[in-house]
Length: 126
Image 1: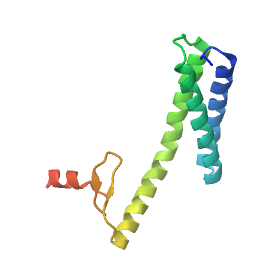
Image 2: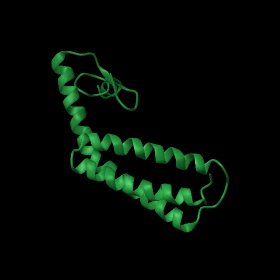
Image 3: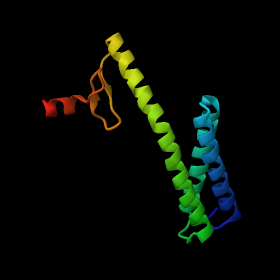
């Protein structure tokens, strides 16, 4: 499989449709549908990555445009997801503090205190 074959164009079109489905699932708070869509999205991205590694062929402009559109759509979906992720993190910190649980780790690897502030950052600002 290469990036110039018809299957690749089909996969890119499927990825664009998948990103639209992802947005619909996010806006509809449909967790089950979102799980399905995300699994499909990962599969398509893995297949496209495999295709890109199988040769140094130049991409046709139509594929480049579609991939650029996919990037914008993915960024749009991330913006929709961000407030929900922040709210979930706040809920988790509240529950952990209420239960007296040990600190957790932030995405950057810093240790979070039960209140959510990274311990390293707390010491640095003190």
